[in-house]
Image (cartoon, rainbow over all chains, first blue to last red; front, side):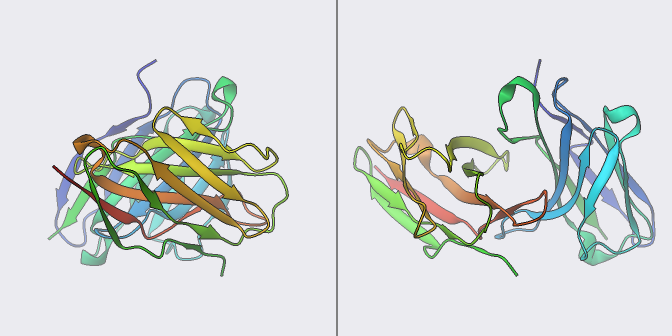
Amino acid sequence: DTGVSQDPRHKITKRGQNVTFRCDPISEHNRLYWYRQTLGQGPEFLTYFQNEAQLEKSRLLSDRFSAERPKGSFSTLEIQRTEQGDSAMYLCATSGGSTNEKLFFGSGTQLSVL
Amino acid sequence: AQTVTQSQPEMSVQEAETVTLSCTYDTSESDYYLFWYKQPPSRQMILVIRQEAYKQQNATENRFSVNFQKAAKSFSLKISDSQLGDAAMYFCASPASGTYKYIFGTGTRLKVLA
């Protein structure tokens, strides 16, 4: 098991375009979180999945953001009609199984909106 | 809104010396986990140490240990025998009451002086 995997590592897009990020969790992990981090700040919660169910979503998340986790495995985060303020690092974290509640992060996807 | 407070934006320590990073939180959960993460310039979030709140014994991982004061809701990280590779941003995280999410502090930048 190689840990939490995120793709792509970097994404540059023009304002108004749609982007989609992918997160592959550690295989036994049933809990999956998406966070956003801007430079100099701590990670900010976006949404949480337990298996395939999206159980919590930040009120800060506009309806341009949507996330899915089909079959409780990988997850995708889509941002529609991107804005310059969406530029940030998007982090995926997972936990569960035998790792006993430890929260493991992927390397993140750095989004730049021009 | 619940918060995690890291009151030291930046700390410096001489190589081989000991440094303590502070963190306070305000969850009202009874059983929970607290985390310290290290984020080097690569921006990969690396789990440093985890404390289980129902355990009175402070967690220890090699050179890293915590001073957990549950009543005071304080969770400080002590790094002994500091090494140049310890230089990074350090974030503490606490669960938010009544939700699934973890809240992160704003971080402490640790500089290690040779």
